[in-house]
Length: 251
Image 1 (cartoon, rainbow, N blue to C red):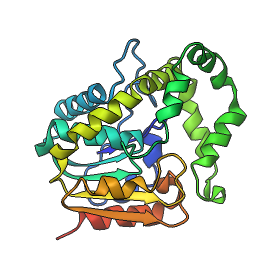
Image 2 (image 1 turned 120 degrees about the vertical axis):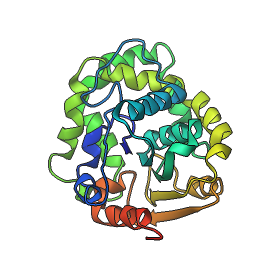
Image 3 (image 1 turned 30 degrees about the vertical axis):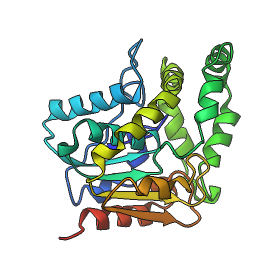
Image 4 (image 1 turned 60 degrees about the vertical axis):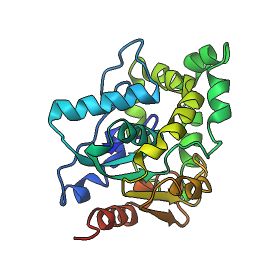
């Protein structure tokens, strides 16, 4: 099961799905508030609530257990879901996951959710296409690797009403969620885990990988040279090969 990051959706996995589907049944979700899922008002966007919804999804579609792959905020969500029910996850694949040892986001989450900045953000940011492109390009280690149609693909569902409200509500609990995540990490220490990171990641500090790796007894770290925050976009062939080799370990 594949879990996208903040402002991403199942589109994020378009290069990975055809490869992974050769080896397993694959689910790529659009979390509530994102992609082409609904945007219910007053949605609890805390990490724990989101993780519980993910577990409910598994119940609804009949997934007893799975390998769970999450990226960025979806990586943090995946760790929380696994902590709530460790027996359901054969392994974790965490791609530049938001984690307590990366300071990126801790200050911005407070800034964007403080009045009147939050109101200004909701009124102005959706109209600033050049700003969207600037921040998107920052997620790449090498912007020459941005494939045609990528930015347009990510922008499309953001036009739906409630998209930016969801992102803002998620940021409101960011720092509290990081504390809750750190407290629950011992519950998933025995789950085999692959950490995949780009060494030019400007969103989640690559140096935090070493601290997170120590939380798992059976873990591997793949640091991808010259790659930014989106290795499945920027270097999909290398990323897919790394994931498949991890899933086939011991076979």
